[in-house]
Amino acid sequence: MKVAFSTLGCPAWEWDEIITSAKDLSYDGVEVRTLGIESYAPHMIPFMPENIGKTKARLHALGIQISCLTSSCELLFANDQKNRQTGMDYIDLAQALEAPYIRVMGDAHPQPEEYIDMATVADNYLFLLDYANGKNVTVLMETNGAFCDSLLLADFMSTIDHPQAGVLWDVHHPYRFCMESVDETYQNLKPYIRYLHMKDSIMVDGKPQYKIMGEGDIPNVEVLKMLKRDGFDGYVSLEWVKRWQKSLSEPGIVLPHFINYVQRYIK
Image 1 (cartoon, helix red, strand yellow):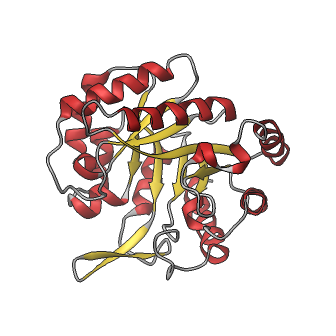
Image 2 (image 1 turned 180 degrees about the vertical axis):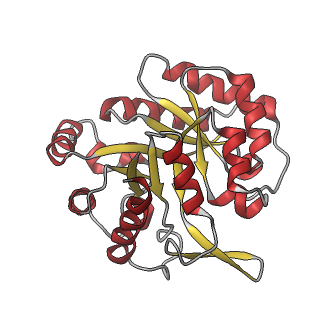
Image 3 (image 1 turned 180 degrees about the horizontal axis):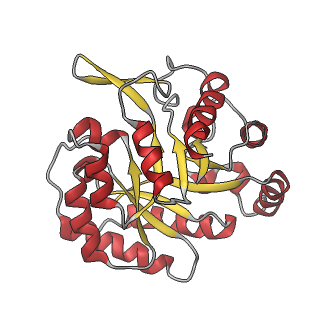
């Protein structure tokens, strides 16, 4: 099992500070979501065509992998060339960086809020999966929005049957928004899970209030024990959403805590 953190958790850090901190803290990878004010990875300076060679060399020297490029690509609209182009751009960049995964979403919201047309989502997803063929990039569908319902997502994935397809299990969302046990989610999605997002929270006035690992009531330890039991060798990534919630604890506190917490159960 490998450990990463999303750049959402350190919005004020420069790229070199992010990757050297990952090295110093014994992380295996860094998940790219935002960098400074930029949220579109192909526009981030380290990933410009003229800088990719230098960026890859620096990552190789540190022994750090870009674990995932986490796009904002949403697949719920028919004839949506903008989101398809976003997905293709991320696949191309992942191939160039030798990153194994990109993330896409069935809809825009963390919690289920609206009906989505599964046929449209499948059509857009298959378009990107076919585009990723032969590029060593897996396109991950996240347990997000309507797909917080893990049985719905499992049924959807069973109709896809594509070698570039997989699931990003955000442990928080099905547990928090669909009241699923983590065992239920895991059993439904186990054949498809390639990557995990982890965070902790408690509910306050009907909304999640994020906490550092172990200070909330998400059963993350149970998840880590299940993964270790079954020999999961993918990434477990901290998604600390400080980019969106400035009041959350600083990365200098949260990142060391997360890897120490996780390693207790996976080493």
